[in-house]
Image (tube, rainbow, N blue to C red; front, side, top):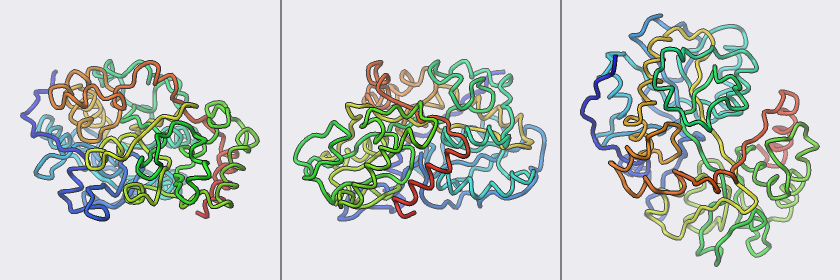
Length: 397
């Protein structure tokens, strides 16, 4: 039976939401202090998950755990899609923004799922590499895809990803592009190459991201190494060596997480490893900020919905996934978070909300751009540890 769509309120962007929440950048600039796709900050929507057993096995309750500010929020501060879903279905939905960072979240759930217990959420969002790890460890259940008719709207290019070859355990939430963010007032020129991050003229004004795959993926591409095919640390060793030399030479000002906005706007960072959706929004306040996919290629990360092992509210989870794969609903999310939607038909629906966004190349990359985007290989646990230890040693994390 089709879900009747209630009247919706106009979505606001993540930038607008943060402004209205009083989260302002330095010097009066309107800058969001966090990135939805990659964590940052606490939320009062719900406490962090713990070792609990979901209360009901039917379709009337749902607990969804996400990164902060990674869904549409209406002008009055309510969670747009969540509220529309609750109104349309009658499901008692609990929404949490307790996922601050992939590694941090994994460390929190590992002692629970690792001993066979269940955590609270019925659905959580994880980036592709963590999705792969959860699948490999057997810590997620197969999704009830037979009860998600809108699965037909999944973009063809996102079907059967490397971390989930049969497409049974995950559904994409949003896609993030990783490239070079820069302040043209600080660089004095446009940038277009990974090598620009190592330009001696920019010494002391470069930021590198603490998301290992984002930074090392770009650095590998800059050296002609395909990050999607690495199978051992030796494959990536030249990129780690280049990063370490840059740190020792003072090329790198700092390693940053979601706190790069103020430094980029002020010129403390002339350039850094950044995310597309943030810069798309930040340019509305500061036209000196730019985002470019380097000539050697950029990275693409996909955040996914998965069901932790033992999740009981499978019927409600299916109804939620079906709801957010409706192009009308998905367009509301895209208009707010400004990352790439996995849902077919979003561009047409987004045009009814914001014509400029509906034609933006960072939201709807053409075939030539898409061909230059790369994904990081699915590493074994042993190789994963080698990469993490080497990166932590360099960054000082």
